[in-house]
Length: 338
Image (cartoon, rainbow, N blue to C red; front, side, top):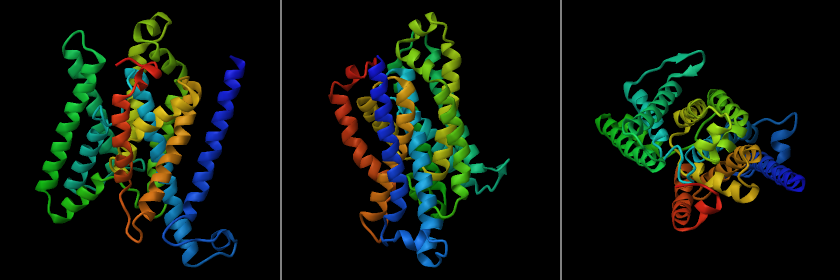
């Protein structure tokens, strides 16, 4: 057991090194090559320094935060539902957040509270509403199963997506194009305002999940066993739902819906480091941030000088991964119940 823990700490250190390398190296990669001297020298100024500090560094920060948030949210849902297909997208949380943000854009509002943008608040409200509806729908009928909850999430996902299409259709050309481009998921930002808006949501939600790693391990054993060991399963679920809604709402309000990160990253990390959430949670945060940062590097260099929405890259990777997960025996390998 001691050797196993030591091996996992070594793997976690390797993942940390990988994530740091990606975070540091990503701003240097792009359509225009930058030299270290031109951007890091104390007297550095001019176009290269502006590209690096005002565009690429904020974009890498956003990508890392969004990837970490989506990945750890997916991990939390998979632990709660003991199903590798449970993610913020399959449960309709991301679609609810997207609907809230789309309503905000359509109304043309420009409000904020305590430094939090109105779009972030609307997105969080939409994410929270979707969780309440999914949980409420499955509680209406006694004896509901995890599969029933997942199906309810899929149904709500379709409904929210249709509502977004309706809003887009009823909008003028400018708003319609803006909503269409935003629903593809992208990280096209400039400056650090978006980073500062997203960081509190991600940091708060991630801190809650890191604090509940022991409870996540208990939930993985089954609700009955978790209750027998003194866990307040209902309260833990509510806290986890709040944390994931917080993170997903913060990410979607700025980046739009970016799919499959919450499915792929936790599964890859389980294969690397195991299902113990004491190690899995920090590994998922680090690897998720690095993964989306790498996807964004591809998005801005693959068809340069044009840029591709990063949501397209993650969907191209996630589609085959989803099929492999469905057809393979990965569920049993991860010890999860369908």
